[in-house]
Image 1 (cartoon, one colour):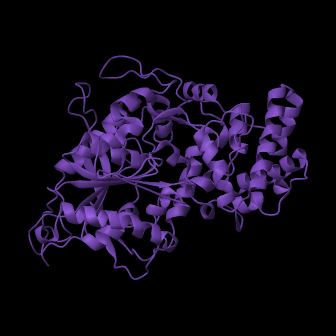
Image 2 (cartoon, rainbow, N blue to C red):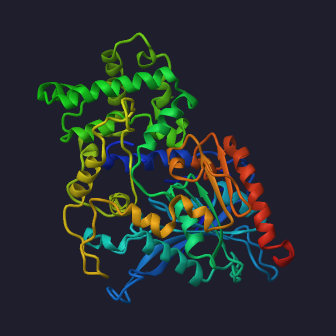
Image 3 (tube, rainbow, N blue to C red):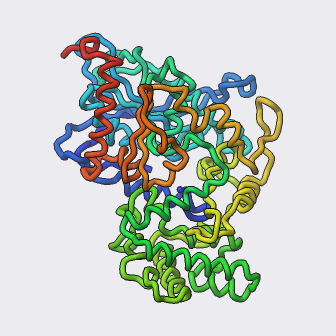
Length: 506
């Protein structure tokens, strides 16, 4: 077990559009910028975070690999828990997301704000097949990466691990856990509340895609709607759509000379499949919408500013070719700045763990394929469609993966989104759960698969704001008002669930 001392008042670090192969790594870079920001207060005390590895079952649901375990990484922040009296504690759990865990996951954002106020324990467990928590490094064992296995990991951990204060006294979480997450982990938080109601009494689901959907064209729609709100303009949106249309006309023409020339202008002649190329070059504004424009930069300006502010792309009178020439310059600069080349963009022909774990989950279960919106207008190339993503899934995972529990091949070309929605109720989840706060950032494309359009009830709260789900997970002063608004609901719920008179007295 490793003890890490973190100066909470300093910096916090943390962890989806280009081609599928480049999407995940590009997203991680943006996350690191998003969370590597000063806290709202520089006067917070130093938090001690305990990290270590939990012996977790490899397979929870069958005889295959019976008795086998793997090391699953955790982080625990008990710095705000008081231990000089007995009583029920407030306990928060952050299910691991589709990326590596960081110790600072338990020292920032809304959960930390609430932990300071309510003397709460904050715990996270890295998701299986991400970071350092890998049951296997052989892609043939990807049958062990399912939502069901991951959820049971979290349930087992919080029910069996012996949590202690920093001075070694037991922590009583018998009143249950509140699960907190954003985007994918936000959906998991809501699903934990649904599946394990005796363990998780509440959940915070930030822009949570609880609706599994193969053709996620709504992502494109939200990015288009967000651009004028995050530093761009409608003229810029129109210019980008014109540019995409011109790119598509070249790629669909079948003229190899023109296609090669287009790729060469962008220094991307090594990109083999035209769809990989189109997915990359027509998705430049996407992550600015997902995470916030200030964290997707090009040189000393935001990507959004570089695309839209006073450029020919926003010029109504400029010809499409002039707009494409400008986009070409931006793609070259962005690729050079971030080290993106053909090897980064091309679809891989074999899987690597944990690099391809998120794509395994989307190819087998969720879909979430970010395709071009239907109709004549789209930011994304129209050749980025369902068939492209099925080809990607087949190419990236070329072999047959046999489910050790059933003995049958795992379907990994067409995701079982309908099965996920049947098991976890999709957008109808609000009828079956209570004490879930669905907090949706309306500039964040992932909110489109959440319940943002529904109204709060006695059972659940649905709150929307003009922002992004990451606003809840960083401790930036700029997002403090939103976190404070959400905290009011949590203050009420926590006080009702665990009255102060039943907690330790100090």
